[in-house]
Length: 350
Image (tube, rainbow, N blue to C red):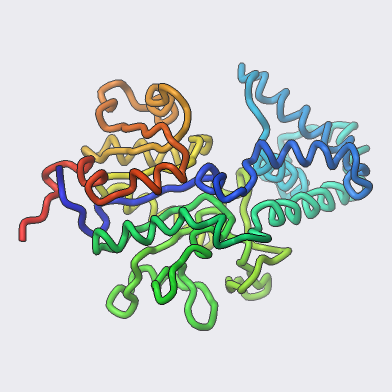
């Protein structure tokens, strides 16, 4: 058992971490979209386009022998955005012609795709916005702050979520560093300038946030007090191709700290992103770093090893807590429990 010091542990949280805050999962979002497509006057005009795109995604998966995939809402938006690039899509020169049915449904200059994308993006922001009972819904997120205070060392949380659960759970007079200064502008320096910033938790939002807006002329990213209709979010392949900050910086930081740390705590992430999986697998191969995965599934370790492309020699590095995020945070995220997972060579002798 080792003692915890700065950067010996990091957290990676996914959509499952927000389920207990009544934030819909991607599957629940898709179910509601399916209902809107059939019954809502604003959505019905895009029904046939949705069915076409969904069928095409499933067809592509079937060619690869994947017949049990569920389409998540991020993938749907990602495909729409790839289509909307039209001639700007890197693979366009290799395409003989667009499918006739797609041209029919997409409308002039693919205008229907852009409109459907905008409607979906607006709905996603609504899905992940805490509209009411905010304090009660995010109360279990306070355990991140209590844990940090118990170990008396800063922690870094990498989030794949767009929501504001961790921010809204912040106790009064607690320093949560999200990368934005007093002018509400983003700067990477805030994550490294520890001499002037005494944060307890450093939060990296890998796919954007519903309260971020980017100035299209200057590229400057600003954080607002409330969710924004045109929030800076990335979906699908965009997440892997973004070469602008904070996305590029945040991925680099995840890579850096995953290689430095002794324990990665993964909460509510389904291992559906091959890029993130590659970083996690690399970290476990590079050292004796351990992985603690919080997920309600049974016998999950074999699936984790497969997703991370690790052989059985890494099995002792992977731990599984069969619990919800709320259960884990409220009962298992303790100094003693986490210290028991850190290798002895990480101990500090005072």
